Length: 205
Image 1 (cartoon, rainbow, N blue to C red):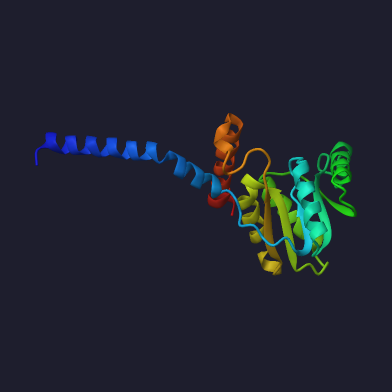
Image 2: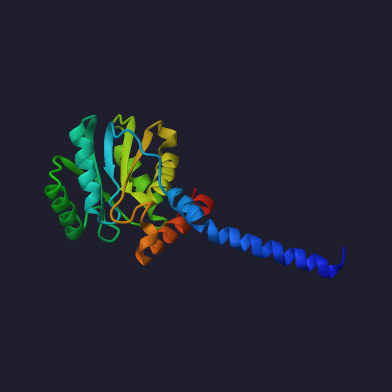
């Protein structure tokens, strides 16, 4: 086979591959977005943890739904601390208290979290330390949908030595696995979370 013919075959192959990628982009883009979402658990367990690293009222609303359905003993929410101290910031604590009140979520415990990179890993380690000696056997993680698989992987890793079973409840707002491509903010969020997921998989976990 001549060199010219080989280059022609290579060129046609590249064009066909690009065309296939273009015409199936909806399928593999949605597949990528869904890979960010954890498998949803039953929503029943010893402790329900609101993964409130970024204030999100929908997490509190979902937590209230799960509490109303029964099967939850304790409800906790993450609250960032000020500086390197162990006390929550007044603003952060006030925001959590307000969201819990609006969601009618009673008897909420807060877990002060000192934010240090990688934040999700260190937050999970602080939660594990907070629960030591409490006899907790299962934890329900209520977390934003597109970061839910990353959160699930982190908590499973941290709690594996303790035998605590982790389940995940992903929560979505306007941007869902079906609608994220409809806005630039949706594309930006999914791209960022995909990069963070693989950063954690390759370098953190």
